[in-house]
Length: 181
Image (cartoon, rainbow, N blue to C red; front, side, top):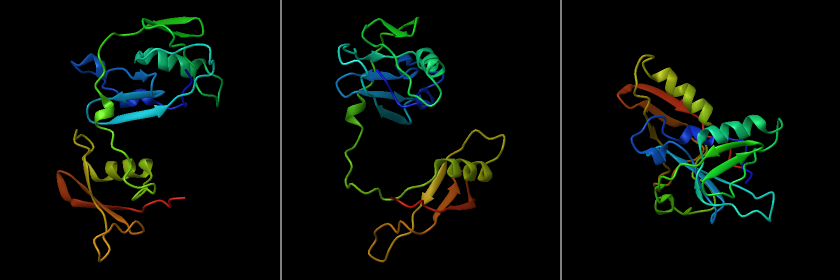
């Protein structure tokens, strides 16, 4: 299984009593690598570089994902062998696949209502804005969005988005939407 060179594991829980949330899950039927911590969920499409090897659904250890990323050539997508239900092979390294039952992620992923997104923002800029609004020693990094509306109530995707620190609504920021190409 080959997947885009992302840090999918960052969507997993770091410490959680629910072990199934601490590592991604490979869904062979959907050809997706999915990770969640119960608050966010990331699903990335995968490809099969070897059509003769059938991948098996199941949990994928975070260590295997990190190892595959390090073992891949710079600029290329990592590859793992998921043909065994109990182990993951990356080059000549073997990792044991946990046997926990992953949540039914398909039940919560909505279909797109439209083919055009409502708004596009730069996540790196949003993180910088959140850091600028929050207490440096605080643990709460939530922000509230207020989207500008047209007179008919639809979202004005070209106007700045008002951002407030959730616990400190007096701390205000604006983020410009990105062009949707």
